[in-house]
Image 1 (cartoon, chains in turn cyan, brown):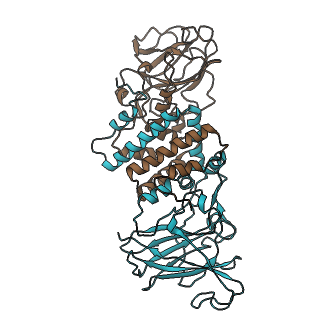
Image 2: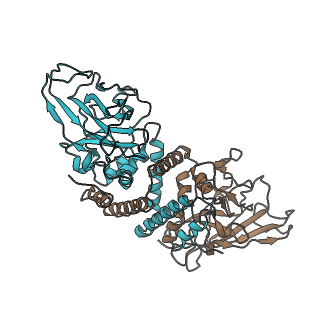
Image 3: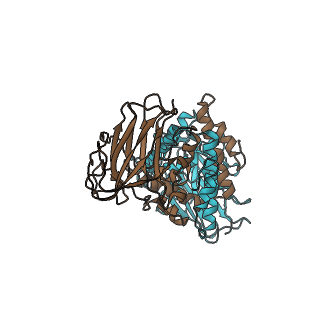
Length: 288
Length: 288
């Protein structure tokens, strides 16, 4: 009889794979089992702790739906999502950052100069820049998928008072590679704390805050898609983002402009009655 | 600004814990994050592979309910459940083995000599033995929670044609520590393959079979609860249990008895019209 022991179980596990199983699958599963088994051995994980882990996963499954992605959030707060971003960063291109659990597909088109703010209150932010290749050449037809929270710190999918695509839009660049839109200044917010991930943060005596940011997914033919976020340099949570999303090159500075001089070509053109902020940020894509 | 990199992210993660967080929680989370991060680095896990992992977990969450426990099954086929059993085995006591995802609470009492077979067809099995301490002294009032599949290879919770507690019962020992009941010979069966765990097994070209077994949870005051299974030595899957549950001391031999001589004191007492099997197995508990 083959004797399975606490010392040989990882080898026995690998022995169960068919000879013709996909080599990459074998590589991933070997690494996963090796580390999972080492984790259990190192901590001498008890049955009660294991059961707690299973209940955690079942709860995460129950609370997840089309709009809430607790397993993504778990990956985010464990630093796994950010690590994977960093493992695939190409020097010279804009860094990627966590997608987060709140992206939704199918956002409506947003023309150059368009507005995401609508009737929401808050300081006006003019976000603009260029989408370029690594040699600074503008990319024509790049698609910028933009999303952020409302001033209450909630994404539309978390907030029954917002329309589905509130603070979501997709802008396509022209030959000059430029993008530009108006919105309100994003706010710092907490990740959802009413589920199992919140319970972990709480047990760890760890805060659930993220620094304020704008989310972008940038796609262009012939280039690697870029999932990223940009952060203002004055946010109090910049040094302790609970999902580890901040990268040095994703930090920008808001420039305040006086009330009356809003640039032409924007939906909010002309005179506005309060100072506004401007975020200039170029996005550099890496060729495929 | 604190710069998070692929090399320091595990340290940054640990730095987020509050100084007064529970030391055991910190120990477990440090080990978990260290191994999870090492797994991602070693495999240079891609975003697409990560997404597949997230979809896997979400699917496991969706398919799970009060009666189906896909995360337990995942832990089982990865060898984690068995490893945890083996890490806490006390030499001299009966080995523990995987609980599996099909135990249900609240099974009805089963008197000594009682029958689990009911109207089901199949070779009669007489299962019996003693519950003792490590010095072979019988344990009075030990509670034996028994469950197994029907002859079709399905547990009651998987099979709409069975009653809730079909092939489930709880027997309590008397002063002699003896247990005994009749049933049908359990069959080898496959773990559920219609969910994400089945997809992994399939992709790994790995079979989903378990050798046939009886499940026992044994509880007695002053002793550690024992979750275990017993396996006949002639099962073709004994050497390759897909959930790694077989231990040398849990393997027993069926002894065949002729048709007419069924022992007294059992519900099936007297003459029966086909040869039956007898499984003698003592269960040794470890003091708390």
